[in-house]
Length: 492
Image (cartoon, rainbow, N blue to C red; front, side, top):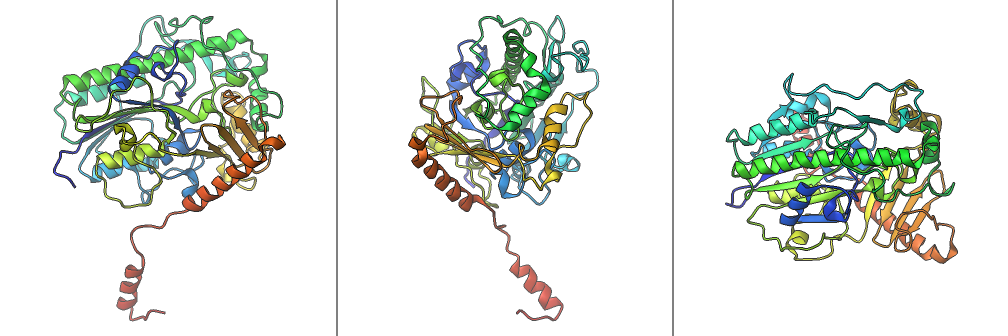
């Protein structure tokens, strides 16, 4: 360990915020001034990709540096066990005071208090209970997750209360080094927000919503979920309304980030802290006539997320007038924090520190990125538990159980020019991203691209070979030898 004081680590992790909905990443409509300000002082990454498109597998991945397949963390039910690495616990073991507020979705519930110094929950009375009017299951918008305006005034929701708790911690002269981890809910569905955010966006001045692709372009899973959600009954105005509220939710999250970073400056922790802002996965928000997400769909709406990093002052970062467009993965977040916090290397992980890229020592980082999801047909235990039809998640969960082939295991490899999706039980997908950035035309059957497909398959095979498993650092043989000696046995 170096003699330099370890930097504080601040993790601001909203849920379901897609990468194209940030001002500093090129969206000229959305208002994210605090995120943009952070990017101006740090680094914005415009090509950051998740390793799974739903919460639990993605969090298990970026908190360990493992791809979901390495230890089977590819479902909503299989969380990290105590014998597996977890970034917050490793920071705690390194001497950090780890303050964690927000959703879990990563470690077994009974382990939450063991992996951090303080598992924060807002006190009763600090959250405004205001909600939009209840919606009946027969309402055509019910399964769209749209709920609308929460209140005519700005309220303190649970995310706001969590950020307030983090601000109180900053003002309390906390022990250093510390880690603040805020795993927020919004802009995750339901699509609902209070004023002034509900009315912040002109419904007729939003960026274009991507059209529904031709039948057979995407997985049948997407088609069936869309049908069960009744999204084909919705008009363009309905999807613009959904998008406007989603944007309002993002702007409210951005305001929370601003309050947090202001408090860091006021408490004197700005220069000696690293700040990471990113989401666990994206959201359709009306594109392709879809909302929410799908566990085996890999469109950029779901796989590309914001990543904004502000490094401590002792790490020299050049001023940039545009985002860094190198391909990065969320497993690289783990490697970067491990680099900054000088974590001892105790397990094989597959992230690459973003420090050299951030410092301008290189302009390239990865040749390709990967994402995976879905399940084998013979894996019913990986599916989410069936729910009633009056549950808003009934369409997605029922599809997992009713059509196991459509929910089949799949994997994505993406370069800057091409995206290839290999599916076990359905047609593969291939997109020419230079000529079709919206991924509307699957060219997998075009003989002109056979060489591209072969190259992508070869890259996938190499990736799986390199990452298929891990060997624990702690040797087992010495333990066995000791057992043999105490029991009077002999080695074979």
